[in-house]
Image (cartoon, rainbow over all chains, first blue to last red):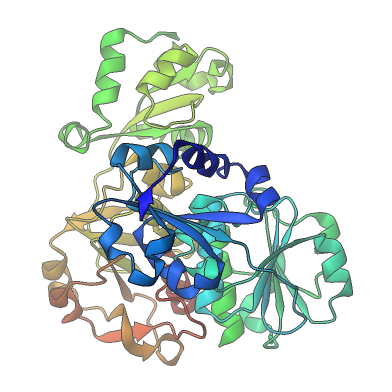
Length: 242
Length: 242
């Protein structure tokens, strides 16, 4: 363990920008839970850890040669989060290859990092194989996504693709959430379904909607205008796997 | 419409603290969507509106005598949100009386305002009659709760009570979410069920768990450690109402 140089502090800060972390194919995990889970589940991809002096002893021994220590003030400066944390880790990204089997979630233009993280966590709970996203979907390596995914980012592959082209070539059945579809409980879902969810405000683009095999709807019993996309994904996934 | 005095600006800021808004039985809604929906749905409880000069013309005419105008800088200073907004409205709180009929959601120590807001929005979508909370549950008049509730705060009554005492006297059937309960799909739910959800990290307190008629669980198919409480509420409500 050694102190973190100013130059390296500055370089970590540069990774808060998507274009920089894309260029280097890296991502940054922040906070005790994300870091400790990541270095265990994803050790082969670990570049290095940054930890408060007071927290360094909690980093398992085999990672000490790759741990740098910082003061509270230094950590605040390199962190992207408002509330100061105890540690940060930098990982290389996994190679992801879109798979043609298993339950798949397709996201068309999801913007909110909290929703993306929650959907990752749901995918991880319900055993989805992968998430496939349109290119304008929020970056899954955004620090808020990683935090709200609660470790799912280390287990669920996320692909950014031309979503219309991906869906056009996929032979599996496609179920898409929308307002005027079939009541979701009246539909039979195969285990390798593709579930398509749209943007928070605008829903799914017309060119994606045209590719649905079965449009599905969660019936409303009260007066709310809409459901949050992550809660709608939860309800549909629970039905598909059961 | 007239400018907002410095004294009144300061007083609105004081309402960001729970003890002050409790004392005056008021709450503050921020942002275009929350304010416009609130002044229509909840006009009888409106105290006044604060709007940017540029936005004031979008406030319906009948509310102009109760609208004060501010500069962008003034609005930033009285807003609790980081991103500047166009308007704020102050409302008197509704009188809420706990009802003994209809689908009820009981929350034991939920802490995150985003979760509380999302559960309000779910209650509104699925036609729940009310939300009953333990006294240590996050304040439903917190600005982040109001924002993420998407208008549900104007329609769903929220009660803060001694939750154990409330559940003990309630004669309706109580279903509580926990890790080792009955698979939730194997349970028959009456339309006036009470669904009990616990704290994000700790779950339900033992004294509340002891009052469950049927503990229910959402089976896991993947590797995630847990589900977010709002997504779990979504899945259980969807099943109860269907």
